[in-house]
Length: 172
Image (cartoon, rainbow, N blue to C red; front, side):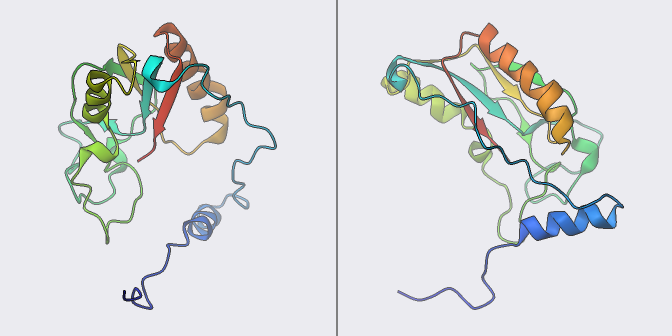
């Protein structure tokens, strides 16, 4: 078994983020960190639960530039409001609007940001009870205030409206 090359090290994204916001003229970036988290264990096994899928992937938007696999960062493809789409299909979602390591991945597998097909198979096999009728998109506008005060409550409302027992957040 060989070790990875010396230059193959984790990306220092936390420091990069701090530096980025300082360059924009903001104060020191404060990561969201909570002493208590509002998560609870599932009440039922997954085989008896209804799962809501939440993704940060964006619906494809013709006319706003390259959004395909390996596309450069594309802020024009961002979305700023929670969206919902039917869970019985697999729509065209993309991730060119988020920062990810474009050197080591080309973002060619949509299952990494929208595992809807795999979840549909899990339902058919009995490993998962059901999917909610819709999946939901969570904006990535990097505002903790907007996320906490607007997006998270809206996502929770939609998950409850759909009868979700559990939610799976798939960040891109």
